Length: 86
Figure 1 (spheres, rainbow, N blue to C red):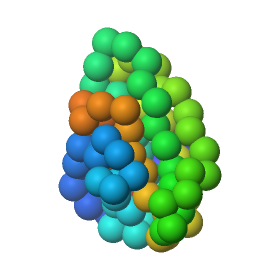
Figure 2 (cartoon, rainbow, N blue to C red; figure 1 turned 90 degrees about the vertical axis):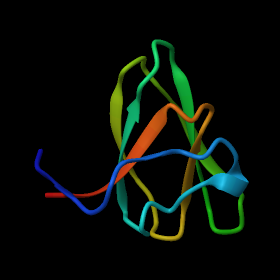
Figure 3 (cartoon, one colour; figure 1 turned 120 degrees about the vertical axis):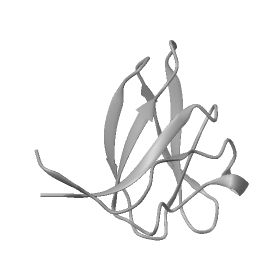
Figure 4 (tube, rainbow, N blue to C red; figure 1 turned 90 degrees about the horizontal axis):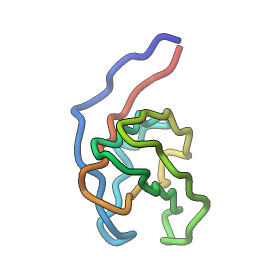
């Protein structure tokens, strides 16, 4: 899989009020920079939770979302990077 970086990596907010759209990108690379499993959540623009996943310790995932959807995590040591996936 090839990825194009669309912006800088940033810590995920820890609540829906601090969630990020990651520059309105459709794909976000998530990196859990902790030694324990962490929950990552996607919410829509109305702050309604759409779904959550657990990300393994030091694991990465690429999440698809609508441009206005927001991502937040259980701790601020989970990072997101807006990407384009080829």
